[in-house]
Length: 185
Image (cartoon, rainbow, N blue to C red; front, side):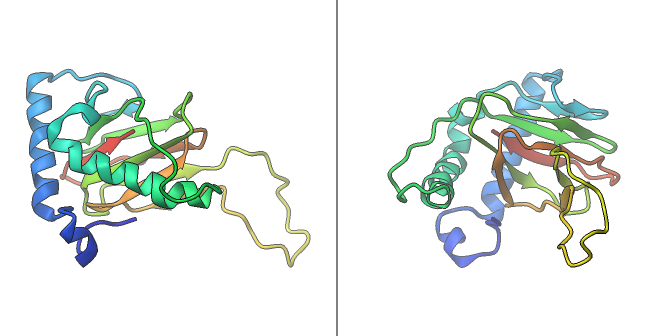
């Protein structure tokens, strides 16, 4: 789901100005804790500790994530829209500098996970979902539709990706001179 440049989402305040404000807050967090933490962030990058969901700057973003889960994801899973609540177990900020990336990983202990891109032009490395289920690799039957084992997506500012927490995923190296900012949860 992309939030930038849509009239509906602009009315909700998901604007370029809002994403710039979130980016400045992430920069301020990095200034207060320059070391951050090391989890999946490999190479050159910074990752905050958990707790983004408790910061007032990110309240609007967290409300929208909860709304999308309740009104869009849960009905897809078979629940009635608006009847479920979302509990954020943890959320954190990421900055991938030049050559920074996030190694393949899972988010164990959760039902669903996601990432919201705060600042990305789409050329700083793909978000990649990696299918780890074993398959028979063959050209037979020839009529069988091919299934992707890995799916890359070029993230842009305002993109929200939700996925089962058990899905192996990564963010490819940033080969540009621009920093990519995101919130993971």
